[in-house]
Amino acid sequence: MKAKATVEEVLSRIPGPVTAEWPMGERFAVALAHGTMSVEYYAPAGHDPQTPHEQDEVYFIHRGTGELVISGNSHSFKAGDCLFVAANVEHRFENFSSDFGTWVVFWGPKGGEK
Picture 1 (tube, rainbow, N blue to C red):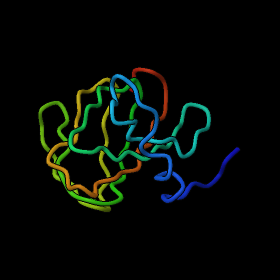
Picture 2 (cartoon, one colour):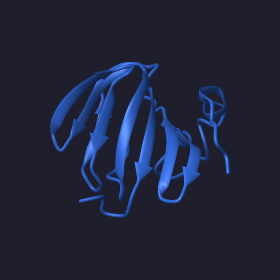
Picture 3 (spheres, rainbow, N blue to C red):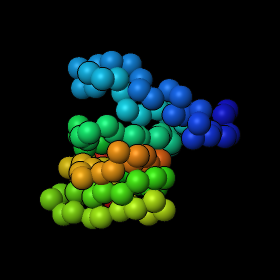
């Protein structure tokens, strides 16, 4: 089981494979995973095309600034901030700086914890 991930190692895998959703290559990479938990690094470029996820998630902003819009409510962020998004809730990063990057932790059952 992998116990450590570095920003440099994870960033070396971004962009990832080209897909229909990510025509310029995936803008995230898995850093660690165990059971229902996974830790990824996310660094969108230009716009954020993500859709709601089936698990609860926490973002730890690594670098940059911007806004996270959750269910239509905008939350400004900067490096060092922590933001929570419940499972299946519409959310998207907007107006983010070109250097934006965040760790994201997914965990728990599909549908989120109640």
